Image 1 (cartoon, helix red, strand yellow):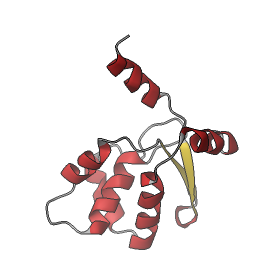
Image 2 (cartoon, helix red, strand yellow; image 1 turned 90 degrees about the vertical axis):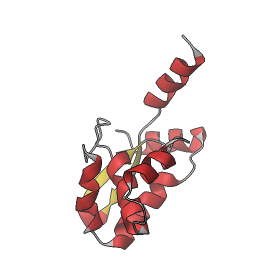
Image 3 (cartoon, helix red, strand yellow; image 1 turned 120 degrees about the vertical axis):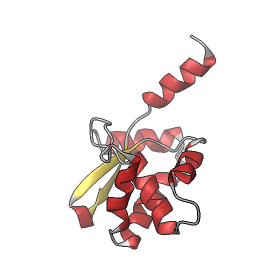
Image 4 (cartoon, helix red, strand yellow; image 1 turned 60 degrees about the horizontal axis):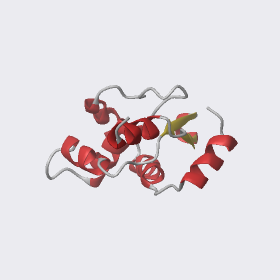
Length: 114
């Protein structure tokens, strides 16, 4: 297996992190942020858009269910999130974007089993 394939596999198998969102009465799951994902968020957000739209795009793309399936299947679903309270979306996006060490991810995963 090439290094490229090994790294892709490692990310795909990385533990799901969780965040309880009381305003939605649910827990969302996500994987640690990859280095290239900020470009994905930026490109999916219209030029000149507000920080709220950028944060909504982060949540839209990264939020998963317990099985690791996207909660918002289309990047266009970020429009649903733009109408949410910006403090909630910002808090979720901030948690998703935190740099997570392998040790912290493993603690989070074992403390919040998927």
